[in-house]
Length: 154
Image 1 (cartoon, rainbow, N blue to C red):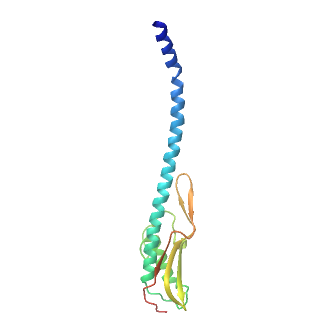
Image 2: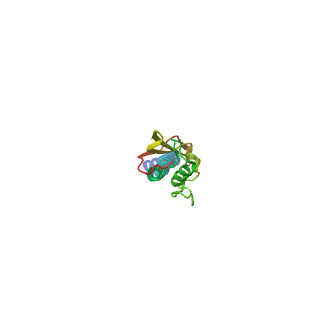
Image 3: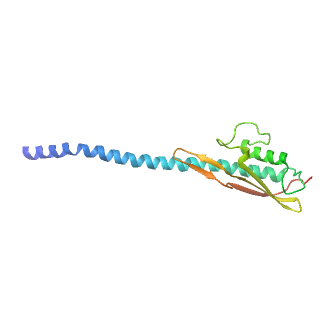
């Protein structure tokens, strides 16, 4: 009986190092999984903010008076739409909705027939969403198109 008890005690004592190794491997895998989940979640959150801002900007562009007689928007119109996307207001006051987003990242593309706009497309290009483990660069996305319903007064 005593010998069996000593053998069990020896086996238990020799397994203590195994627990530390298993914990280290398990913790490493869990940190990688949680990091990946955070990376995906943060990128998805930022993309959703940008998508909402682009939709708001395209809606604003489709209802605002278009004061150009060509398919190239006037600088005041383009600046107001860019500010609407970046700051949430056409005046360009406040903080950007996403860190590092600038009006130069916003592309306003009207579709025209003989200089009269029929739709407004707004998209983001050249913007990088930075998170802990890497960045995601957006090129012409997110994008939103609305039919033009404003007044054309060149």
